[in-house]
Length: 200
Image 1 (tube, rainbow, N blue to C red):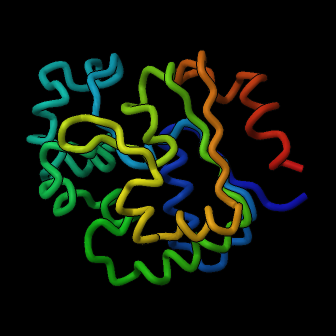
Image 2 (cartoon, helix red, strand yellow):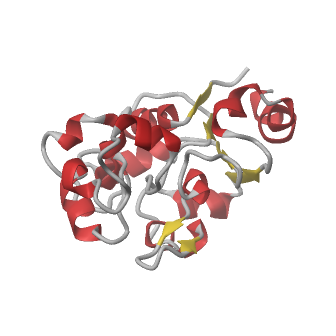
């Protein structure tokens, strides 16, 4: 069996960070299971629980500070109305996506492209990842219109390898409706439709 790496939700971002920064990895397939790969921007029940005094329109006041960057969700909070603050303040996602100058960008791209398959799984009924298309590198523009991955700058400029993976036929997109965020890892349809063949 070939080495496979996969994790749901925020764990998928951590996995991608490991794959990008670890030059000696031998992972062939990375299964990203409803992970906010392009970031998070939305008023979800989870957000309201963590930060009852904030809503999506003002969370940037906390997230784009030194203290905020010590909070998990703030590392991938991507406010489309405050892009400059996001790019200049995000200590994790903006660097990982090469949206900010990064002296390791070339090496990280080379490491990421060691993958033989990148499987991006998500769906419209997730309820937590917002927009849900972030699980497949789609994200909001400044009007909160979702721009799909293939139209995103990080894809078009191939900043960390998505376009190369797609050109090689090694980028798999799997969208499944009817699955809530907490059930991705245990849903049999998701497993058989999106994951099983990449585990062989």
